[in-house]
Amino acid sequence: MAEKLIIETIEAHAEGEGGRVITNMAHLVKGETMKERFDYCEANLDWFRHAILHEPRGYPALCAVFILPAVNEGSDFGIIVLEQGGFTAMSGSNTMCAVTAALEKGIVKMQEPETTVTIDTAVGTISVLARCKDGKVLDVAIRNVPAFTVYIDKVVDVPEYGPIPVDLVFGGQFFAQTNIANVGLEIKPENAKAITRAGAAIKYAVNSQLQFEHPENPSINKVGIVILHNGDREPGKQAQNSAVLTGDNLTADPETWKGMLDRSPCGTGTSARMSGLYTRGQLAIGEEFSHMSFLGTKFFGQVNDPTKIGQYDAVVPTIRGSAWVTGVATWEIDPTDPFQTGYTLGDIW
Image (cartoon, rainbow, N blue to C red; front, side, top):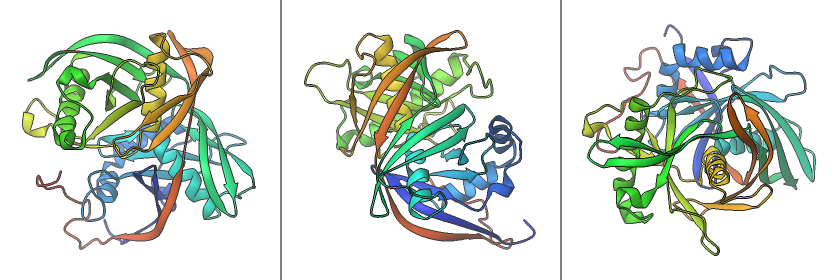
């Protein structure tokens, strides 16, 4: 890097999950369409993803999101999400952070009591309804891109864990989902490290053994996050999950099976979970679904408008939750810095 790079961000979290909203780096992202921009990020901007998410500027559970100019008439802006495992086309918690930050900091004009924000993503345009009062965003309801189920109870051979049935579902990105009992665990704080290890192993197995792609964007063809949930839906039972995010270095070596837990209930994961439950006949069109995170925070959602995405039956999910701005920051990447693109150490990564 020949010159110092100055990065401006709005720091936020959605129901506990940190989202770093990057406001002045649109010039780094090339492409006329969101698909072209997404592909460009994957091919050319991994160094920036590492720099902003890894130490010394980031931490293991951090995500970020580019705010980009809109590509479609009537849209307010575009987003591409940066996660520890790679770029993703869509994220519910990061969308909540982006919308809350954009409205509260004046990037998009706030209208009270409600503001509609339209956002372009690499898997379609989404509509967001933000409830606002006294300059504050109270909550954000996202009408997500269509969600669809590729496999139900597809058995994969997970090293050290054996055959495990997974649901492979798209909710804005691809998820592998399974009952946490299938890896001999429960959703408890003392199991956090064991849960992340199991999730990383499942992700490695799924991406190694199954082939799939989004019908409208074939470059989206890997599981990004694994959802370990508390089983079938039953009356009076609170649906809960542990969403496992990993770094981008998963291999057959068990030493690489590390990850971090989504602090929120995971927005696209909630969309995927609802699609899987709908496919299983456990969630009706228009029925409210409450989804609890490891921290006890909740997203609420429902599925509507059955449709088709390529060969797949799909539904349009809506997810609702709240985000809070925690600060603003200016980050620098100095050309003399030996850690321009950051680093990770095995003590916490």
